Image (cartoon, rainbow, N blue to C red; front, side):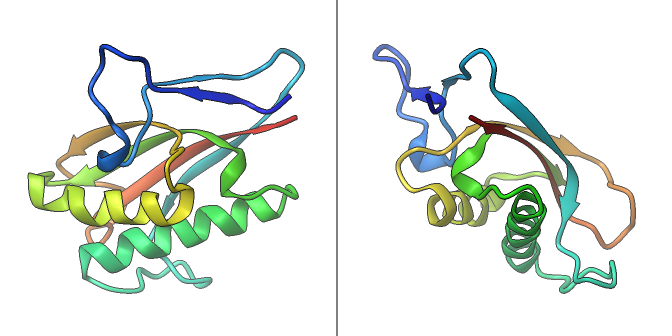
Length: 133
């Protein structure tokens, strides 16, 4: 049985913002934990100073990490997102990337605004949890 994403009546529709409210993962499911990924190329260098480009590359990197386990974005059940100097203008690129990757069934996600990440040019980082049935 696959994981079950539910956005209950009585809570706002979170999908346009790039997340869902709840997910249930069946017993016996293997979890794959993806360390914080950022907008880097294979050499580890940030691909662009542009926030939107870092967001897109970050999600491509999550896809590469998942593929190493025979999984894809559809297996992701949770994202934890870190945004340097968060403001409302940054929600658009994040929501667009999540919409592209997950459509109407995005994983649960928590966005955390931070002062800085591991390197000064990293503006965006995402941890992921995937469920392998």
